[in-house]
Image (tube, rainbow, N blue to C red; front, side, top):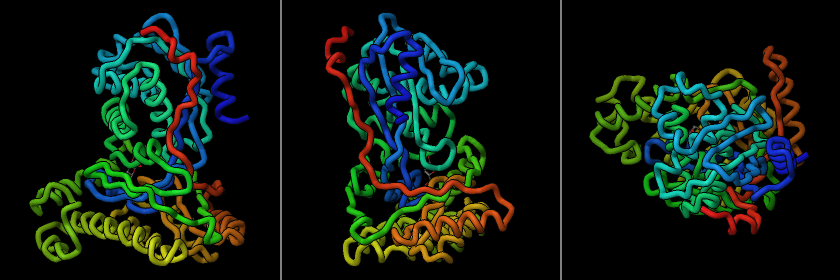
Length: 401
Ligand code: GLA
């Protein structure tokens, strides 16, 4: 069963018949390079993956929203007019299961951002993006719901404006102080390409990856160590970056280059300096990756990916033993480059591998995990895919506001 079939089946179960106003979907993402740069106004090079969350939606004739997920036992219902009051409460007092904060948070954030029609909806969610693994299952939910409500509520926002809505939901409704890279990758992704994202201007440039033509695959090694960016580690790194920028007198770390690092070393404590050095060198690695892809092709970027991992492990300290094991095993088995992807503290590593060595690299990772006494990783390939989209039925145009 596909996520789309599952979402429609759940909607039918919820409403008692098969009528569906339309389906909308959004992908997870892998970040090729550019980690912890987004909230520093920097650069990132993510791509949307071929795993998606689907929202099957049906309009209802009152002004209430009901959300259900194949991953959760019970649906959650709230009046549209109560969203403001609900999200004004501290999370513990909302009486919401954690997952429902994402779709309802998007509904709340969309109404805070744009003039919207007040139309009740049933939303049934199904997904094949692994949850909590650093492939942005949360941005995929946000995208499916944001694109659906944007159409049904006639908010008329662009994908970039919807990415801001997704980030607002995640920051304020869920309480995770994340940047905008995940939403931009999921909402603006392009088939067979990565996007070069300028997180200051939110300009997006498609970058042809040419992996298939070069005989390469991206292997994901999911450590199955769950992480949450609402925990302290992510916020702590973000605060260190902001402190570094303030001490060095720049609006954001984006405004520094490696020429500024000697001065940074003088002015900052040792830990903050290493956090800053990661961001400064990582921004440059993103630009170098784009240049090398154009000049020398996909086979030439492996060492940049691996250098990114070393910087995240040693300077930014957001890796973990399982991620390091995945990266080391992949490289030892012949990967061209490998790194953790996403926020870290668990989740996934990616490895750039020759297609005909992919199963060898996957086996090597599984064996290395067993030798270290870790639970077996999940290993699979991902392909750069299209971003969020609507698959709306014509019925939607006749819905009365
Ligand atoms: C998480 C966040 C993103 C980004 C990455 C690290 O995925 O949601 O905004 O900061 O971590 O690059």
